Length: 212
Image (cartoon, rainbow, N blue to C red):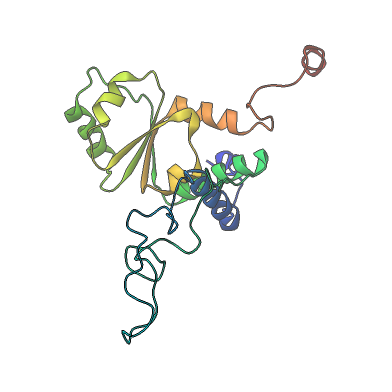
């Protein structure tokens, strides 16, 4: 247990987790919001009433921005707004490990030796949740080829499915509990411990021979 805590960073860094969470949240924005200027709003351009003699303030068409149903004064016209934020790979991985550490300290991670089912039945998956003591929103981190678990969990309202290899702090912090198999957790820890972008071993064959 102590070795696992050291591997995950030893202590929780709230500032780093918040920065990473904000990045994941911003990167999910589509940036496709649009508004119409007064020239784009449908309607007549006729002057509503004569300029003088009515006692009212002078007015032009009904599409003016000060009238209800009119256009916006400064309409959004960009084809695509980019809200994406970047973060160094090492910081991202440390934030993900820190989020896992926080949930581990709070006893909100349910590690199962073998997360598998004989048939893709929701009833069997609900039995697994009851055995784990899950009574709130739950993230199920499962391998993409684990068909039975994916089919059995997809209809459970309080559960969200996630690829075990793409587990991030955004997904972990959006749910109270997390269920993952021991093998998938070990594979994720091994991949997140690297410093290369792809989580691959970038050392040459000569360096590996010297290390051996």
